[in-house]
Length: 493
Image (cartoon, rainbow, N blue to C red; front, side, top):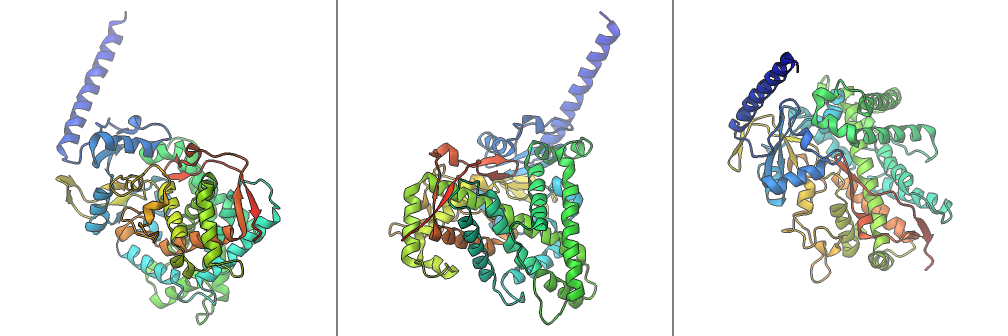
C-alpha cells in the first residue's frame, strides 16, 4: 500500500478533526439557543430531510425545545415554536423581532426594496401608504368589496359554463383571486382567457414552483453554494424580470394618462405620491414595481390555495358543507349577492373559514424575521441581524390553544352557544409589526368567494376523500392541497 497515500488521508482526517473541533467550540461559545451541531460550510443542511424543511424544523423542536438554533451554511437561524414563544417574540417584543430577514430566493432581485423585503423607514413609509390604499381611499369609484363581489360573479358564470364537468378548480380560483389584485393595481380585471393575463399567471406559478421545490429549499439553506450550481432555482430571477417588465409597461401607460384629481388604481395613487414627495426615493418607480410584485405574490397564491383547501375539506365533510349551505340560505338567501356585513350574522361559516386557514396552514414558517438589536431572549443571546423563523404551523398545532390540533374542527372558533369566538392561536397572517398588510383584503376575499360559490353550487366529487387526503402537503415554505378533481352542481331551491 502507498505510504504517501495513507499519510495524506491521515493528515486530511487530522485537519478535518481540528477544523470541526474549532468550529464546534466557536459555535458553543456564542450562547445562542441550543440546536443540532452544525458542520463547517454546510451548517445543518445535511440533517434536513430533502424537500421536507418544515417537517425537519418541527422535529428539531421536539428535541431542542421551543427556541433553538439551526445553521444554514455559516449563518445561524433562531427558530421559534409554540404559541407562547412566538407570541412573546412577535407581540410582546415586537420591536426587537420586527425586522425582515433573508429570503435567498428573492434577495438578489429585491435587494431590500418593496414592502415585504424592506426595513427601517423605507418599510414604514411603504406599509403606511399601502395600508391606506387597501382601505379604499382614493382608488376610483368601486370599493374593494364591490371589486371582489364583481369577480365572484364572474367566477360563478365561468363555473356554470363548465356544465357540471369534472374539473381541477385550481386555474379558476387563481384567475379569480388574481383579478382582484389586478383590479386594485391596474384598475381593470382580465378575461380569464386573455393571453397577457395567462402569461402573468404562468410567471407567478413558475416562480412559486421553482422557489418551493427541493432546489429552492437547498437555495434557502445554502445560498452561497447554490448560487454557483445550475438548477431550477436559477430561473427565479428570469421569471421576476419578466414580471417586472410587465408591470413597468402598465406603469408607463398610467404615467401617460394620469389625472391627479381622479386616481384610477394603486399605480395612479403611487404616481401621485411620487409627485407629492418630490424626490423621496422611498416612492421611486423601483419600489412601486417591487411592492406591486409583493402584493401579487402575497395575495394570489395564499388566498387561492386556501380556497382550494376549503373546497376539498367541505367535500370530505359533507355535513359541514350542509351546515354552511343552511346558514347561507337563512341569512343571505338566493335573491342577492353576499356582502361583508353578512359575516357577523354567520358564525358557523366564519368559524369554518377560520378553521380552514388554521388547518391548511398556507405559510407554515412565515417569512423570515430579523432581530433589530442585540437581544436576550429566554436566557440566550441573539445578536443584532440574526434571522428568526417563527413557525406558524407550531402555533396552529399547539394543543394549549386548539383541542384537536390535527383534526379539522370548526368548534375551535365557536363557543358553547354557537357564537363565533376568537382564538389567540390563530396567526395565518403572522402577528406584530410584520402582520400581513393584506389581511383585511384576504379575509374579505375568502368570505365572499366561498359564500358566493356555495350560494350557487354544491361541491361534489366521485372520489371519497379521507383524512389523509385533506392533510396539507408541504412544499418548501408553503402548503398546497393535494391534486383533486370535482364538480360544481347547481343548487335548485
